[in-house]
Amino acid sequence: MALQTRSASTRTAGALHRRPRLRLSLLLAAPLLWLAVLYLGSLTVLFVSAFWTTNSFTSEVVKVWSTDNFRELFTTPVYRQVILRSVGVALAVTVLCAVIAFPVAFCTARVARARWRPLLVVAILTPLWASYLVKVYAWRLILSEGGLADWMLRPFGLSGPGYGLTAAVLTLTYLWLPYMILPVHTALEQLPANLLDASADLGARAGRTFRSVVLPMVLPSVAAGSVFTFSLSLGDYITVQIVGGRSQLIGNLVYSNIELNLPMAAALATVPVVVIVLYLLAVRRTGALSSL
Image 1 (cartoon, rainbow, N blue to C red):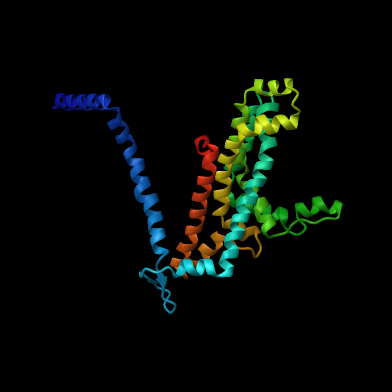
Image 2 (tube, rainbow, N blue to C red):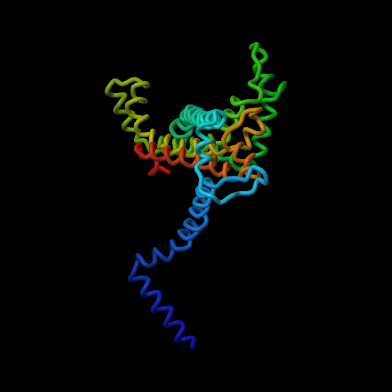
């Protein structure tokens, strides 16, 4: 019996060895099944439920096909303002992350000594190990009245931004900055030094070298990092609740409508999905997706 089992195992292993495509298909079957059933299935349910309605008296979901939720979404000024505000915050966070990440990544990849570079990368990753809520509440204390921001700006006759959209942008920038620094660091580390030397030998100054040599080669990595910063900021709602004051983003409206009007919450949730898909299509032209 044991001999027969061993023989069957040997034949199976031999068949899989001769058929690499079959072997690859079997290895990918489980994750692809998870992707199709759980992830894509959940998105399908989300999109379908966005076309349902809610009974105004009982608040029960009525499974009748209707486009009223999307019509209300794009005709009500409040919803339009929240959508534009959410996209604006995500873009502001992405731009700030890119502006801050580039000099930090240049220092860690080109200026610092080789033996210190791994330690600097670990230092950049360290904030990701801390709790999300701990970091947000720390920024709430920093930006509060009489907090660290007020204390640092008081000698200049200024005060901290307090709670609001500015506080939300600053906090989100801190949260997602490592996701921008890492791809830029990798791109700068792989940048051939002889290109910079050749640019200098040809008489190009630092600004011209940055525009003509460094930026074109690093831009795909910046776009790759922006995929994370933009999408994570667009879907965030906890930070805005803690430091955003009275400001609301799409995530806050989705959360507040889950129990009262589930179809409207689903319709609101489709907006970030569509925006992110359009954003991915836009950055795909830069080659950023191959850098992820």
